[in-house]
Image 1 (cartoon, rainbow, N blue to C red):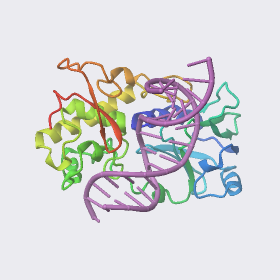
Image 2 (tube, chains in turn yellow, green, blue):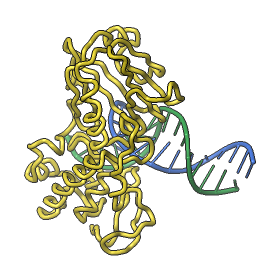
Image 3 (cartoon, rainbow, N blue to C red):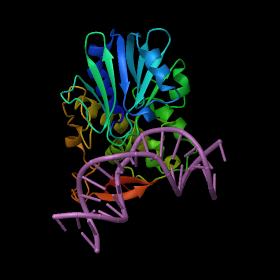
Image 4 (spheres, rainbow, N blue to C red):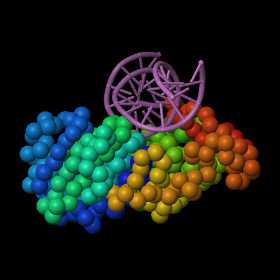
Length: 270
DNA sequence: CATTGTCCCTGGAAGC
DNA sequence: TGCTTCCAGGGACAAT
C-alpha cells in the first residue's frame, strides 16, 4: 500500500520523464476518480498544460502545472501509476494521461478508492496534513509538542495524517517495533527516551524503505513495473507467526483502531 | 475539542 | 468443487 516511501519512490521515478511534458489528452474510465470537478471540464482544463514540477505531501502526489493549476493524486491502498505499460486495458484501469512525446501514464487501482483533484488551491486539499517526517522541522522537540495531551494509542496517533503526514499501517508498526514501544501505549505517556527512540525510528524506517524503493505488498509496483523490496526488511509488519528477531517470541497481531497491528509482546511493553 | 466508529471498494482467502 | 462470507486499510465523515 502506498505510504510515504512508496509515493516518494513513484515521485522520484516519474520526475525525469514527466517534468516539462505537456498533457495532450486524458481518458477517465472511472469518473468517481475525479473529485470536485465536472468530467468534461477536467479534460479541457488539463489538456494543454505543462508539468512544472512533481512533489509529495504526505501520501499525496502533487503535480504542479502551468497556469496556476495543480494535479493532485492519492493512490490510497491499491493505486499505482504505470508509465507506458505493456497492458492496454484492465478492469482496474481508471485513467490514462497522454503526453506530447507520446508517453502514457496509466492510473490503476484495484479497489478504486484512490482520488484525483485538479485545483488552483493546493492547500484546500492537503492543507490539513501534519508535518512531513523529512521536513527539517520534524525534531524530537516538535514530536513532543504535537504528541502533548493526546491520550490515544501511539499507533492511532502515528496513523493520523493531521499530526504527522505519510506514515501508514506498515511503517507505524515497524517504527514502534524499532523503538520498542507497545502500539496501545498512550501517546502522551511516552517517556522522553521513548519519544527520542520513536523519532529516530520513524526516520530510519522510512529512509530504509525509500532506499529499497518501497514495499511491494499487495499491488504496489514502481512506474516502470519494477517491484520494491522494503518488505524484505520488515520485522513485524505482516509477519504474523514469524519470530521476533530480538527475542525469538512469535510476532503478535492485535487490532488497534480497526487496523491490524503487528508487534512483539515481549520487546514492546506498555 | 478529542477520540472512536462506520463506510467506501474489490479480489483473494477462508469457511462450509 | 463451488458458493458465500470475511478481510485488507486510508481517509472522510458521523457519532460519542
